[in-house]
Amino acid sequence: MKQPILRAAFLLLGAASISTAPALAADVVELKQPSAAKVVVMLRFQNGSASDPKGKEGLAFLTSQLVTEGGTKELTAAQLKDKLYPMAARYGARTDKEVTTFTFEFHRDFLTQFYPVLKGLMLTPSFTQEDFARLKSNQLNYVEQVIRASSDEDYSKFALEDQLFRGTRYQHMTRGTAAGVQGLTLDDVKKFYAQAYGKNNLTIGISGNYPESFVQQLKKDMDALPTATVKPEVPKVAAPKGVQVEIVSKPDALGSAVYAGFPIETTRAKDDFAALMVANSYLGEHRKSYGKLYDKIRTARSMNYGDYSYIEWYEAGGNNMLPVPGVPRHANYASIWIRPVQIAEGLRKQYPTELGDLKVGQAPFALRLALREMDGLVKNGMSKEDFELTRTFLRSYTKLYGLTSAKQLGFMLDSKFYGRKDWLQELDGQLAKLTLDDVNKAIKKYWQVQNMYVTIVTDDSEAQPLADVLKNNTPSPMSYAKVVREGLPKEILTEDEQVANYKVNVTGVKVVDTKDTFK
Image (spheres, rainbow, N blue to C red):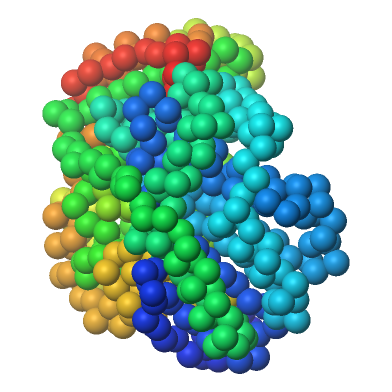
């Protein structure tokens, strides 16, 4: 890690003083930064997509977008843009399963001019039919088209959650289902706004250089919000009996994207989460090339772009190199993400002479290899050397999570959600106290490979042959061109044979047509 970046992180963290202040009805978290030019205000409501009424999946997301993308009682959306352009201010909403966070960032010199906009958006949003129709159309297009077409990686992640949380209010994407979004009305939005965003479920976060009078004014104004009468439903989810696989059959998919996961009974609220962070980083830290999954699947065998593991939801992994705040959850799961590997059709076209008879591509081999690596950690634990190296890396790396005041404030609000004061500040001390035994105990306590959910988004030509291989636990040799195989070390080829015959505890396989997902 580069020292200038770390020094900047320490300076940024050290320059801030953290305090909590008594609120009227809402809680307030302050992060005072006397030298900061920017003021950040976050309004965190304890309601998200898990609060969507049945049959109206997507309502929480649409409501939050209409608040920030529409106008106010005084100004239209277009007039707001014109007014704010000289200020270089920005704002937006993030809706997750249990919380919705409205974030406003502006230069301290424009505090007086910008605050009426913030107040107007939160207390007197215009909720016009024109803005509603525009935003609903965009959301429906995402649910019906974009998620299936733009990223098979994200598609597989949301499909896994659909399977893992089936029958609960966590099941649907935050943007909802096709039927849910189609049925939403402007009256639904107005009703949800009044019921979900209340002074009794609000936490106010403020960072930067601002006068005390601003805090008092904000608290007083937000106290005009009604009392929230809805709250998210948090599911209790048990692991399945065996490995349950759902294969999404999609026309013209270029590869097989694999996502596998199982519920775990730990979150940042518990101290042993830090121990599991070390194990997870060693197995497959997001976008890091030293992880075991990355090393075995990408580096050694050049199968795909990357392979990672997670012990909590990772928002927009394709865009974010570092975890982002604003997505805290009480129901948690561990997962493995195998970015798309080649399908049989593509391999046959590349190597018609050598692989012309290939029926199934690399997905079953990649899945077996990933589960075998996790299984090995459960059985054998980490070595002392690997533990020390990984923990040292994490103690530096996690300091980059809060490089901006907005991220610091966001993680502080997440900390409050989990019952902690400041998780980022506490984390280094937790990591410092860890022992190898702590980490290996956490691995055995929370990880396993016998009972999990697996989703695979693949081409329709691959779906049924892949299902047959997994259902019957048929050995799946790695598919190499001859020139590639001849250049590989003997130990890789020996391991390939072991992986090909590794038994996965598959107890159910189902093929789903892509048009039947997220309905």
